Image (tube, rainbow, N blue to C red):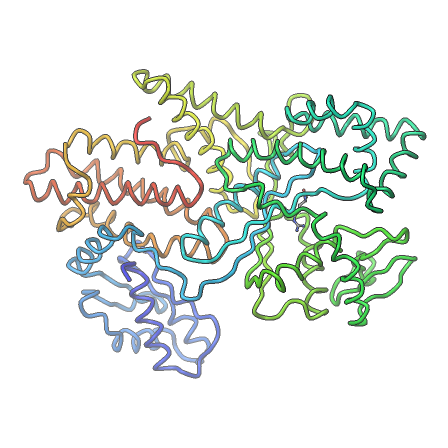
Length: 579
Ligand code: ARG
C-alpha cells in the first residue's frame, strides 16, 4: 500500500478494533488533510460518543498506543479530540518512490471483485438525446472506468426505450413517409423532427390514431412485417446513438444495447412470480403491487402498476424483469442505475417489490446513482434559442468548435491536424468535466465560458497543467522514465505539500467510487494542479541548484502529470501532450 492516508487508516482501524472490540458500526476512520497538520483523524469523537467517554481522553489513549513509528514523527491530540499527525519525510520519500515505480500509481484493487451491472445512457428510440442523457452517459461511463480500474467485472447495459405505445404512431408515420425516406431522416439524426411529426398527426387525425392503435396490437402480437418496421426504427436510432457515443468517446457499443424490448418474453413470468408470491392485487382493473412504505399525497398506499387494464405491460414491469435477469442470469452483486432524480420513486418501488418477491438477495445491491438537471444561464432547464430542448450533438459540436478557436489563439503554431484532435479532446473534455465536477445530485448551470476556461476547476485547466509538464520534459531532454527511480527530496514546503497530495490518489479514487461521485475525483485533481502550480512557482525545476535536486523535481513533475492523465482517463477525458 502506498497511499499515505490509507496506511494510517489501516493502523487506526486495527488499534480501535483491539482496544474496543465491542464497538461496532460506522466509525469515521479517515485521515484527512488539515490546516494544522499533515493529516487529522477524528475517530475519537465518534468512538467517545459510543463509549460514553470524554473524547479528549479517548483520543489521548489512541495517541499513546498508536504505533506509527517510521510513518509519523508526531501524533498530537488537538481541539475536542482530534489526532493531528505529522508524517516522517523519509516515509514520504519512500512511498513516492514506490508510487513512481507503479503503473497503477498506488491505486489498490478491490479486495472482492464484484460483478457490477451499470445501467446508463438509455436514450429513447426515435427521440433526440438531450442533456439528461448526456449526464447519464458521462457519469455512467466514468463509473464504468473506475470500476474496471479497481478490478470489478463490469457489464454495461444501455436500457434504451425501444418499446411501448408510442411505437404504434412511429411505425405508422414511417409507413407514410416510405421506408427509404424515413430511414434517411432518422440516420442523419433528425429524431425529434420525426417524433414530432408523428405526434402531430396522432393528435390531428382520428384515422391515424386508429392505425397507430392497431399497430401497437400488431407489434405486441408479433406480426412479422410490423416487427420488421420496428427493427428499422430501432436500428436507425441505435446507429445514430453510436455516432454520439463516438463523439463523446464513451464506451458503449451495439453489444451493450439491452432495451426494454429485450425483456418482453420475461414479462408474463414476472406476473406469474408476483402472483405466486401473493403480492399481486387487482386495483381499478389493473394488476398492481403495493410495496410497503409508499404512499401518495393523500397518504393512500401507492401501487406499482404491473399490467394495465388493457393487458399491456408497463415500464415498471420490464424493470422488474430486468432485476431478475441481472441477478439470476448475470449474477450481479451490484447494480448501478445512472438515472435522473425524478425517477427516484420509481426505482425505489422497483427495489421494494423485488425485495418483497425475494428476487434481490442481500448479496445483490441495487443503487440509484441519481443526478440533477442541467440548467441554462437563467437557472431554468437548459433550452435552445427556439425554446426546444437542446440537441446533444449540437452541443458537442459547438464545444469542439469553441475549443478549436481558443487553441488557434493560444497556440497558433500547432499543426492543423493536431489542432483538430486537441480541440476534440478539450471541447469534449470540457463538457464532460463540467458535468462530472459538480456533485451529481445537484443541478448545474451549463456555462460555455466557464467550462472552457483555462482557469479554475475545469478540464482545460487540468489538461493544460498536464501539457505544461510534458513540455518541461521536452525542454529538459530527460526521459520521463529516468525520473522514476530518483530519490525525491522534500526541502520546500510546496514540494512537501505536492508530495502529500500525490500520495493520496488511491484514497481519492476509492472515495469517489464508493460514493459513486466522480466529482470527488475532480476535486482531488483540481487541488493537485493547484499544488503543482505553487510548487512550480517556488521550486525551479530545470534550473535547480544541483543535478540531484533537478531530477527529484522532475520526478515530482512526472508523477503529477501521470496522476493527472490517469485521473482524467478515469473520468473519460483525454490529456493531450501539447495544446
Ligand atoms: N429510457 C429512460 C429515460 O430516458 C431511462 C431508462 C433508465 N433505466 C432503467 N432501467 N429504467 O428516461
